[in-house]
Amino acid sequence: MTGIRLHAPRPGWSVDADVVVVGSGVAGLTVALRCAAAGAHVTVVTKALLDDGSTRWAQGGIAAALGEGDTPEQHLDDTLVAGAGLCDDEAVRTLVTEGPDAVRRLIATGAQFDTDAETGAILLTREGGHHRRRIAHAGGDATGAEISRALVEAVRAAGIETIEHALVLDLLKDEEGRAAGVTLHVMGEGERDGVGAVRARAVVLATGGMGQVFSATTNPAVSTGDGVALALRAGAEVSDLEFVQFHPTVLWLGPDAEGQQPLVSEAVRGEGAHLVDADGHRFMVGAHELAELAPRDIVAKGIMRRMQELGAEHMYLDARHFGAEMWEHRFPTILAACRAHGIDPVTEPIPVAPAAHYASGGVRTDLTGRSTVPGLYACGEVACTGVHGANRLASNSLLEGLVFAERIAADVTEALREPGAPPRPATTGTTTGTTTGTTTGTGTGTVLAGPKARLEIQRIMAEGAGVLRSRESLERATAELARIDEDAAAALEAPGTESWEATNLLLVARVLVAAALRREETRGCHWREDAPDRDDAWRRHLLVTLRPDRTLSVSTTETAAFPSAAAPTPHPPTNGAEPRSTT
Ligand code: SIN
Image 1 (cartoon, helix red, strand yellow):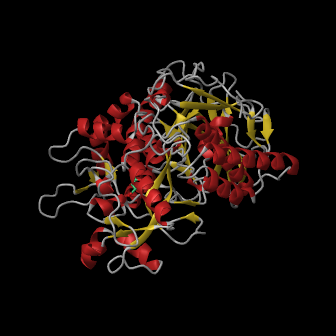
Image 2 (tube, rainbow, N blue to C red):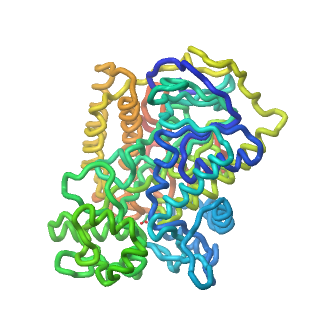
Image 3 (cartoon, protein in one colour):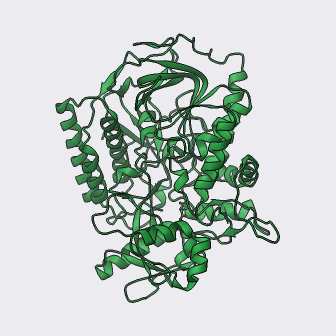
């Protein structure tokens, strides 16, 4: 146990559960529903409202081998190609073979996908990297919103306890170092406000991504890397954080646009839209056999390259040939977003540029979602199961959340039945200080970054660790982040939501930059201008843990497969580099 935790008041209230699920996207709510169906007492805590996470914003859809002639094997092949040599084969096989039935169970839970009016068959579209139509969608381009609606309704119908507006702070552990719940801060007034604790026998992190670490992102404001930061402070291993996927086609709103930006789904290209420069030239044709439907990293790089060549701030996505009716029926969300910004895709090309979209890395887990801390699970974008490798295949993320949520639920409910299962924490009502059987009152409070640090971190990351990176830009980012950390130590910021979020962003930014600096090659969505080629010696993962003195330990795996045990790896030698380092 590292003993590092956020500087926060002691919990003033507590509740007990068998399982606490942190996050309410497809992953979190699926775990909650399956655990509750197996008889477990589940509490879901979520940072805003139940449907406010990233899932709601997913447009394109959910990929699974559901179509005639498609097979898990073909889905596996496309996933491995996109992952650029770093996928864990077993994790991908699990995803693609269990995926189709997991989608059918999601439909049975109430999610309504778009179907053919005559045959009733699920309509499938294409996205980058898929060699066939494999993406199920709902409401045209509102797939995530429909999945979220169905799961939220099911959770409410099942009577699962939920705590909204709750920012998770830190992991509680028992005397053996097992996860025993979380501390959290509930914003607003009510029965449970301020800092409290949910004590539970298993903790499932499903907190989503960390897109807010960059200035411009498709992620909502709540995506501040809270789960990864919590896991690091709790001593868990994280992996692959250097692989940030930049979505190629995000609506360009000007050079200074900040925060969440409107996504223009790959499905628009899947249905035949063209990427063009200001002269109307289709620059992806000839650059890759799949042209605009090449894997996402290749398209993002193609756009960036053309922007550099022309000194342009963006490229264009041209789908005027769809016509008004298709735009209105197939892509109503995107059409409305474009029109809200004064662009009519029916009559003009859409200005687009890449923006931060998805963290392929996260809390390292095994195939049952277990992290390296006993009793702590991770699922969805916060997790690194090995499925995505160096670049996630489009629309694999909802599927990953679904499949691994079900696996976690099976593992947790099985563990709760075992005779040696950790006892349910005693119900003692309101606590102050040390919670029964758990440690909240000990450990080193970490320094807090001030609220203003958020914008600064975003600027540093956009400039130093964005789509194009180099040793020089990453070293500059390292130094600037270290300066923010030193300022935080000197300033003694008061605890509060903005400071906790900024502190989480600072920690995940440090890890991301350390890993990106160490990986001296270009692979998947990690693009080093000073090391432009893929290097086979780097077909391995970078694993990072946080030391008690808050420095980072960075090591590598021996191969692209994760070590089978979920225990922290013994830090094997690297390819000529130092086996461990302090950052
Ligand atoms: C999109 O619709 O382009 C996003 C889908 C994804 O991120 O998988």
